[in-house]
Image 1 (cartoon, helix red, strand yellow):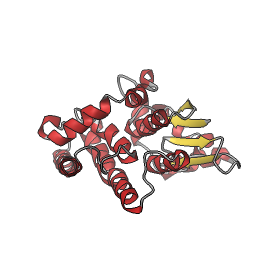
Image 2: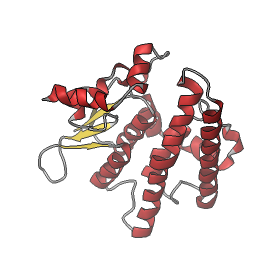
Image 3: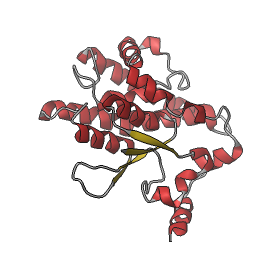
Length: 239
């Protein structure tokens, strides 16, 4: 059994989609990031970066004590290695998957996150930030579109992989990002194909009712007012 510490966001969807694709038994443990539950001592013991998702594998392959994993990219790799699925073992093909997974982790996710923040959540409009991150997200979509033009099917080659699962949830937010997907024909084709996968739909639907329609002031503070002191407070409660 996998315990999935989760909230329905792009990073959370990566793992719910992977678990659905693999058919692994799991239970969802909601982490309400709008209420600051990511700073709870019991969660910090699993995810010291106070970010979800995280997992606890209650039945690891070595038969030992439960294994906890934080960071969505690391979780995808762990689950791929546990199941032997969605990541090739041949060195060149494996490296293609890992490169595009890291591209998402280091590029598309952070830049789209900043773009979305300044478009949707910043208390005042900052034109420079909106232009800066909007252009970078546009550039990254161009990189992805070119790659899909080369591969023809999936991001890292002919086979569906954890690279696709990592990237898809962030492209899922293209409307909020103000990215016209019709300008990227290869991404549009790939996105439509992945959206039709039953496991993708189930992963996106997990915890759907948990998403708040509006962002309260308390939620804004929990999401955007975090400092080192927030972590120290959680660690103090653990002692």
